[in-house]
Image (cartoon, rainbow, N blue to C red; front, side, top):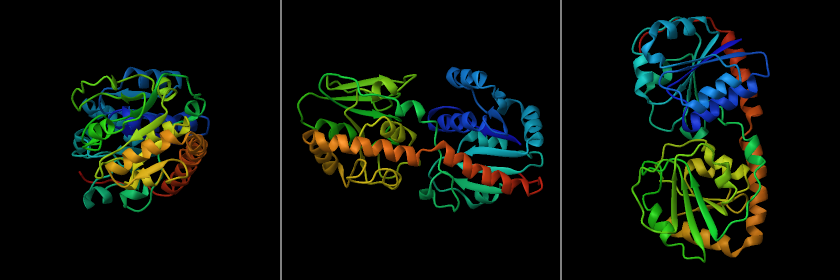
Length: 328
């Protein structure tokens, strides 16, 4: 079976998910082709070469080539969110195809978009559009991470360092955590401004988060209540590494973190600060939660489960004829 993946880019969580799916599925019977509408980063390009994945990029500029691949594929999977390049692609007719949209972002999606493909899938039930297949990358290497000795008590954050995702009082919450030797390591491209305090380290964008996870005592992940996240790949990576998460009680996080079982959820910013202090004072509980976090990550972030669900969808889609559709 020939499955064509179309994505605006290969960065952040969506790139991790696509590589996780194709990497595991390449061991099976299907051929996967990847078209990136925009530029593809060196890491993703190297991965495609090493895994013999046919790849095209800057395809928004090559309509003829894109349409050839769409018409030739058995199934076209569009990794969907409100990206202008996807809007441009479907503003013109495309060849007859079996079309699936897989939505990676939580936001209000117009009915016209939901009805456009043969099948619309969410990645998480919190998106509320009906069927979903939970998305995940390959977590194998994160399960192999062992804690590394370090100075002080390190609270880490990995991900989007931007107020559109972070809790608006993130810095103030960190400053309220008065415990001996505390340090905050923020991993990701910083769009929040500078913080002139020696307790903070902003690493900027990094190629590999694993060395940082090895030195985190806790994973402090307080997001704003209206954030757009879904399966939160970085949260899964931290849990797979055994780093206990402390999160807010938002929809997305509560599906992943069970309070007192594999981490702690926080009702508000004051509760978040108290939860951090509580875990600092309870090393035995931290160890118990660390073990449970790893076990939960194995269950929640399973590429085997994801691919099994996609196999069912593929069989279902192949029973349908390729159909034409108008512009979106």
